[in-house]
Image (cartoon, rainbow, N blue to C red; front, side, top):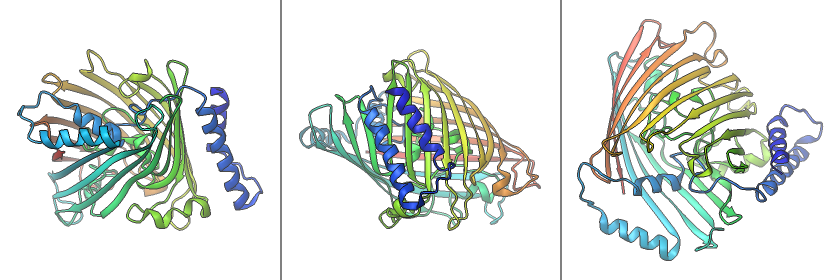
Length: 439
């Protein structure tokens, strides 16, 4: 079964390149037949559990990680009554809720193209899930949601600050000025006594594609070079309509695959949902990996991700494909977390054509705080920015200080060598500070 599912998913990715003369309607039907066939096989095999399916940005993982915070510098839990009420709501009604507010400020040693040398942005998020089917069992069906309000305190947003400095990349990607928007609104179905998981609806592909424990820009590294695809993967906007599933292929191997609308508007996802069926422009991914055991997939993860995106004349994005890889492990009671990641893109309008990142996470002070240190080499994508640009080098270090159970402060320092779009500067230093309050 696993081999047949692997073959089906591989065919799913390559179907775009195989120019069948079937017409758009037949092509869409064929894609859905392929997806449903694969998911049928998934339901008959051992699948990544819901607790581990996805990265640190997945809703349930975020809620679980926040609930597990211990040994904060200020031990008093200022929101104990709120936490108890949430726990009761989950127990009695199957409804979970999380709220957080994050703010980031960046300051550079050089003025950017706008004349500014700083940026500051903030974000409010409301997220959770509601078990509507099979509550109290392992085979639950849940509605998962995440809403956000993104705003900027400066003319140049934190998201745009990297390009304003002449750097091909995102110094802290999600902090924009998009105002109200969706990130998640999908159905999560568990089967096989909780061993199978399928997601369908408005999803965020960065929740499950090429993830590892330090990928979250809210709690881990800021720079996108140390996140999904190492900045060399096409990533659709959040709240894109699609379907995803994952499966264990025996004790150690796992498989994750997806198909989603490649071009979505997070501020109005319902208006673009029909594009999945009418425009025939998809982002497809297939990930094959190894982990020490299913319950360690979040921490011990070696995988290869293949992806493909369709061309869009309206969005002005060429089609293309690429590959990404990750090796990350956690040692000594998860205190040390070294990793090596990278990727390659053939066209596809990505930031980087080739990228390689190495780094280390260290959980300090009894696991209360976290130190991160990483280095990236990247070659800008000529298809996106033209030929002749210099390779870029980035070094990032952060220290996440858990002030209380609810509040984390993260000073961050990034050094950028040879910013490709700023030939007058050999190097840039960017100092950042991130605040997160999680309730």
